[in-house]
Image (cartoon, rainbow, N blue to C red):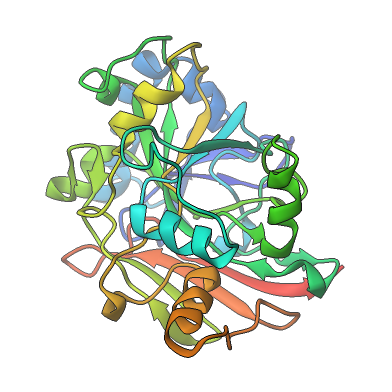
Length: 325
């Protein structure tokens, strides 16, 4: 099942059910006005939404043509946005880029940070850059949306609380990161609003590609019209989403409508390219002694998508342009 949110009339948008090909949709209806309303009562609302999806898919309901430009993020605002860093290759490269050593617990204890969730960007919203010196970078990620998840959830139970999956562009202002982390209190100004894919899908939409808490498909990033990378999202995700759920619930529970990110998808094989510019700059430094690729500037574009084995664009395409603020 594929879901999305149209902008308006209120802040949380209008929940719609989308045909598998992404071309047409039908409103979920007054009883389920928003995605948050569906997540709050998922056991009761999911069957209703699936029946609507089946009728749309079969042609029993014609639906309306979908204009992606009118979409908000699937969750226009979320209770929490928690982002992990599950790919070891990415951690090692970006730490090297800022002259920091990887943590001793690199392979045993996941890294996570708490991002801003009150203002989230839709799949076609511009990235506003206020100062080019801040070092704007994109980060292509996979995310899950959780239902009510109790404290002390174990990884073998975590699948029960994953309702939906989507993609994200977790924008980072790289040149603000070192001074913030030097304070010993984490990211804040270096993490502006995150953008999300047009569609959020139930795990069954991924078929065999969803296994062991990972999405086993390539995540494609296209930067200024050229392929930047298409790394495999599954095999090198050191900490699965199940691991991440166990980690974040160590001391507290999470409410329905929590977004949880994988961190930047990254492969050790350089032929797979990159999902953020910081990795490319670090590779240039290792090979040539200094980075050559500049960070993003006004006019640059980034697109992020994931296509399955049948060529279907599962989550829709994030397409953003950098503009001056």
